[in-house]
Length: 382
Image 1 (cartoon, one colour):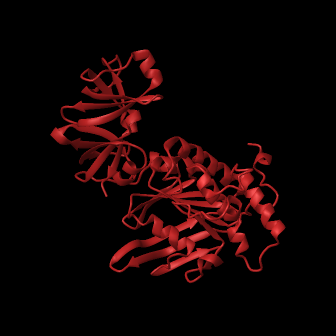
Image 2 (spheres, rainbow, N blue to C red):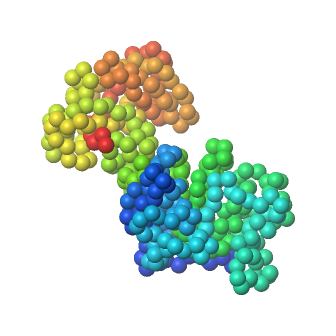
Image 3 (tube, rainbow, N blue to C red):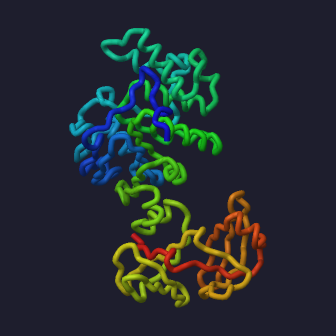
């Protein structure tokens, strides 16, 4: 990639890499009365990375973000920025800015006045020419040149999101926190803004921390994802690591789609684990963590790993006779819901190219489903 294409405009400087983690949570917990919203969080955030907190509502991800921002103080443990404990440091004294879900823009101010608001609050206040230059540069970065004189109500949702982002980056924070900033955007605009955020983050080198419940958003944008549940961090890793090597059923179900077959480990070896599921059916897979015979486990198969055929070809391993319940065309692939008498219902994703050669399958049609044992994961259930 041409690095020159990502040089920041004059007036906004790319962040310099820090010697150590730019932010840390060390055994951080947060209570709201009897509710334990965050429970012993330990996390290091590296300078220049794009990290996402991913999890369902109430899992503690926004609480973790607000403690980094300084809007909440930990009940125990330490929050560090650049190696310094900041538990009692006010938000405005931290090298951190936040983009809120509903943007929190001032309707009585112009776009330029909104973006420059934080600069005008500094003491000593920067010269007017410097503020104007930085606001112009921020507008350029978010591709809103010429919009400085407009009012907020004259902008679309996507443009308002860009203004909120410009207002955050104009202060040149070391850490930019984003609290579900694209939740109010439609699907197409959300896709565009995901790409735009990635480009801006790489361009400026600022560390981004995103909170989202949208797994596709986290997978497509993040260098690392922190999966949360019930106030705890369940697993942290790259999108590929979490997708290919989930720690348990919860992670596999939250990162991408998967078919789950609950059962008991019947036989365990170094290369393969046999799982006995409903009706005594035996399925094979590879365990990512140690399991013992008799242990309750779940066999996980991603829908794109399943292949459908009208007949079993020579050389194919034994498949499963299934009936097509539904077919949904999604452009680049087709989603099938099929049912096996013993295994029950499961999903299959068939690429467009496969349908062009084999033809589409129809509801009610009897087929054979196949998957390789190497693509099936044996996971613990907790």
